[in-house]
Length: 425
Image 1 (cartoon, one colour):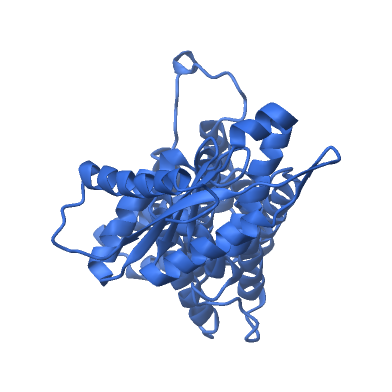
Image 2 (cartoon, one colour):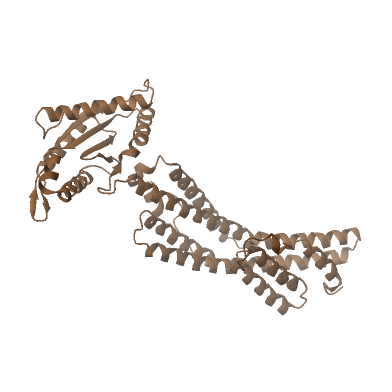
């Protein structure tokens, strides 16, 4: 036997098992770009390929089928499943017939198809990924307010370097493989995200990112092999692509959480996020035997500023004080606009003496501030209460405990008001 022609009817019968037949009356979507339509068209291309006998014709039909599959997002595993099922069907028939001569021929025929399809699919899939990640980067750059997505751009650039490496894999010019050392990883584990660490979406991103780098390390190692299998690389790369997209989705959600967590005027954390962060800090304090400190500030005579200079001037004072807080405290500290002219600072791993020193420095710096509002120079001061919270693992963390600490620091702040303002208690 010199060709596959004898088995054309068997091939055709087997392929029909894969066909998806849907009654048009069952469809509610009349859009023409249906995945089922794409699968139907793919079947035709697959059948055309299976009926080819000459090498040139096989190469041409393989190119047509894979190009269509890539353009219509038909997964490699679907094509592989078709091919393997067809091969098993024919090989099973030959075994039943005890036809050992044709068994070897058919097996070689399908192995050659498998290798050719996998190699071409990998090449075209990497080309598509290059284009796709260029588009994603372009979309991020066009965002008027990038929010956290600016950091996703670093990840997209990292992905492009990985794709380029897989395409060539001739040198050591692969991207950073350690998940904490890439640019996205540095940001993800920096103190700038401290207020979002408690969210489930942050934990999802962190887990996705660790898995992504583990996959990338395996891809880099595997791509250096002389006898690599394209199908294995396709599996890894498609998983990496999916994980990357999931990271982008979670970053978009985290960006919205950040916006909803911030005070719109001052861009400080809002009061609604305090309970969760405070609870997390208490738990961390108990677990690590670390003390921390609260500072509650209230701008003095703020109503007078609003009444005398107008609410726009008052807003400018609030924004100026928020800027002072950002200049004064660490990125790992939590800065809240607690309501109106009240601000709260949570200082992790901060002793009582250090807390009072920081509060006094803030009070002095506030006294020296000048706010220019429409040509009028406005000075303002603050009164603040400082509460040192030593770790105490015997305490039960609950709503009553949080309220008791807030009442204590609030009482100290009002004592500063009572004792003359522009001071710390």
